[in-house]
Amino acid sequence: KSKVAQRLATHELTMQIVDKVLSPYAKRFKLGVATRIVKVPGKSDKTYQAPRQVLHRDDYQFAASDWPYMDGFRPEFLVGVMWAANEFTAANGATNVVPGSHKWPPSPTDGKRPSEGGGGGGAGIGSMGGGLPEGTQIVPGAMPEGSALFYLGSTLHGAGQHDGSAPPRDGLIFIYYLGWLNNLINFHFGIPNEIQKEMPPELQDLLGHASDGTDYDHPWIKGPLYTLPYQGGPGTLSSLTNADRAGAVR
Image (cartoon, rainbow, N blue to C red; front, side, top):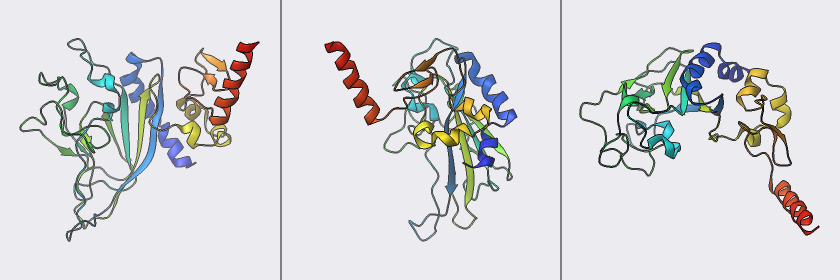
């Protein structure tokens, strides 16, 4: 609902960069994640430090990200953009990135790219590809309020450690997917349709409303098949199934 967030999601420079990265692999891209992430001092020990997030790649959510592609070719599945709602510093947990990690080849041991953990921060998932190479450079994405950090889905990254004394780190994250991938967040369930209709056309396009030649009118989906997710519900599914059965009987 935030008008500011809507403008950030469709920022002109962001659209240009994301299109440059993702257009070789799909006809269009769409918004897959839009959320706020705040890093606050921890409360698990006397120092109140909040530990850093496990270094991970966002494209791990798609199994195809580690397929054995031809040498010299590996598609990008998504682009992340972290906007700083306040200053990001090494002290308050600025996003850590590992420069060049998007170019790391798969390990011959397990066919995975070296990493510290799996997707979503690596919770419950051990290291892959033999773990981080010795001498891996981890750089905090320190930046002033109003700045943005762009990273590829194949780049190792993760929230930094909060030292326990600095102010909270406040950021807005937008992640743009190839148009044919499933969203991490289903905006068509999460945002009422009447609100979506009031959004700027360019944002509606990012949510999958724009016509792409595959428009379909069906109880489960109304709009372009290429980008819109399933929009029905239990009632829709039940009524359609019953209708199909009735037609089959006839």
